[in-house]
Image (tube, rainbow, N blue to C red; front, side, top):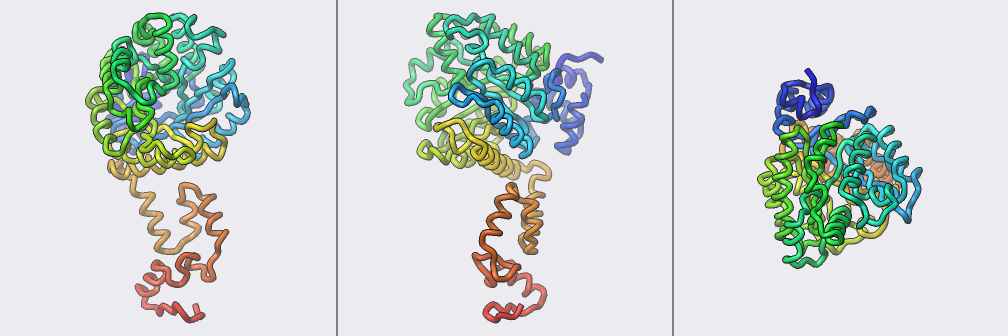
Amino acid sequence: MIYTTQMDAAKKGIITKEMKIVAKKENMPTEILRDKIARGVVALPANKNHKSLDPEGVGEGLKTKINVNLGISKDCYDIEEEMKKVQLSLDMKAEAIMDLSSFGKTEEFRQRLVADSTAMIGTVPIYDALGFYDKELQDITAKEFLDVVEKHAKDGVDFVTIHAGLNRETANVFKRNKRITHIVSRGGSLLYAWMELNKKENPFYEYFDELLDICEKYDLTLSLGDACRPGSINDSTDACQIHELMVLGELTLRAWARNVQVIIEGPGHMALNEIKANMLLEKKLCHGAPFYVLGPIVTDIAPGYDHITSAIGGALAASCGADFLCYVTPSEHLRLPNLEDVKEGIIAAKIAAHAGDIAKNIPGSRDWDNEMSTARQNLNWERMFELAIDPEKARRYRKESMPEHEDSCTMCGKMCSARNMNRIMQGKDLNILRDDS
């Protein structure tokens, strides 16, 4: 039977090879996964032209996935350095990589990324439009914006961020409701500027059906962007953020009717006590579509440590229903991340995702922790290193401060609770002060 997209196949009762791979990874019956994809509560981004893809699912009942942002900029135009970040991301098993390149002819990097990456690839085509056409923003036409999307789709990108919810009505809500940080989404601010300069409707909203034609042709997943996401905790859960979310819910139904898969993007900066309500709102207003969040960053005062502020919010968001976490690096708000920043951002996001999975009772999510706890109680250092989310750092810390007795560490020495409980449980003497073993 012929099908156009993963969602189309799922609705027709077809289980694709990609569904089989994802079902095995998630330890989920293929029929249950197929049903979730058919209903839109799980997305399986898999562009027909991404031949190296090792597919992943995002959504209800699946493990929380993480995304790594990278890409070239005018000030840091080094494709080879970005490819090192790509390889690091793949080695650390990030499920997605987004190319946010914003300068020059980005096609070379994007095509290398798709060719080399087993992770799903996302882009924000509007970033590429200015360089692609070598035109000022105001002079780009609606058709040209759509043509860039198709170019990315043809290159094999699996999902694209499209800020279609920032229509004229949403823009008016923004104008009536003062914010400290205005519109902080880079793509959203560009579209808002284009709309204001040209006195026209958002082309991605006005020509949404034409956008869906492209998505259906290549099985390109729409990641509906949150142009009005809060850029400070002061601006969260305000009128324009929620208005845009309602528009995204309407667009989601239109996309599903065309068998186009959808992911919804969300905040942003947000106080801890608002996160649970925001997760509920998205799932309600967007009909259970998978939710992809940046952070949320839970305080605005920690430049240099925003991988931590983000992981705090990401863990809570994941525990309350977020399906996909965009990593944040220590260099957020400061500069393009280097290799070490990327590593720290990935680790922080993976910790948050895993903590969320434990809280959501994702099957098997506690097994890793239980293995680590067993190794700790047994003082099996080598096994602890093997299980660590960052084995290299764990080994280095141990090596830098070796204890007198191997069955302890330099924090507690022979007062180590694990050592002493093991000895007592085995009927042995403690000999804490004596030198004999």
